[in-house]
Length: 317
Image (cartoon, rainbow, N blue to C red; front, side, top):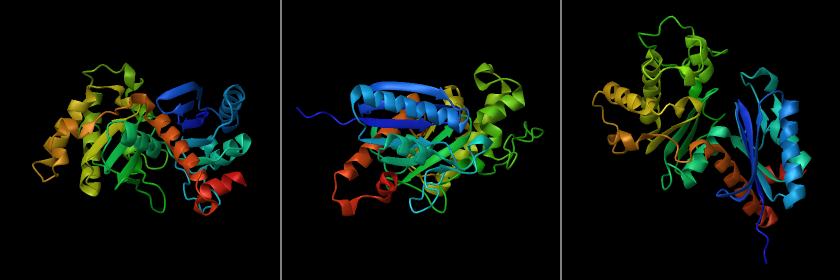
């Protein structure tokens, strides 16, 4: 009997790290979650989890890491796999991929947390069957995985949608914003820490009828308009802790329609209930994407050596 391969997935978030062990994304064998504290402590917990799981169930075939950022995802870079200039200052210039992959002695694939979630949603979630879509997370920070022709959009660095600038809401002119770099960029206005700083409590403690939500919805609608006119997606998926407020979606769609003001937006955006949507995988989008990344890496290992990626070669060194 053929023993099924074991895959590890790590969703490295700004608030917590989620580890999963699985044969397939739908067959999770073990999981654990750790608060994002210091690199030493948090990465140590991750390594301990996968080492323990491997002793119990057998060796990992590959590992997928989907990390908060900014990160260096350029495989030819000396700092590939690093978390770089993050607002979480303790994590600046942390070699996340190298520390974990070398400790576990396993081939690994590395990407942003939002690209991982976008992959999961595209294969098994709300964007299944689509090639052009955007996954946005609004939580501790704001990030977006932009998929075009079935591949993530990346250039000199990966897109940083959280740091675009948008018009201030007339009801919200006094708050300076919470981004340590830009003040009132998108992330500085709509991420969880910004809401808590502005209103004095966490997002999930704000009443449904609080004025915060109309302001939040307008900002997110403007973001969706920018994504629509720049990338022409077939769907925009909004996830993350702040978007657990389901009542936000109708507000965002209403502001989107009003602000578009009849401008041609393509057939996909013609049905807003099917265009601006929550994740189909719920909170599991990131870990699902990380497992899919691990599967993809394991498949590359089965190819002739000349076809292997630099990702695998680097981790094996």
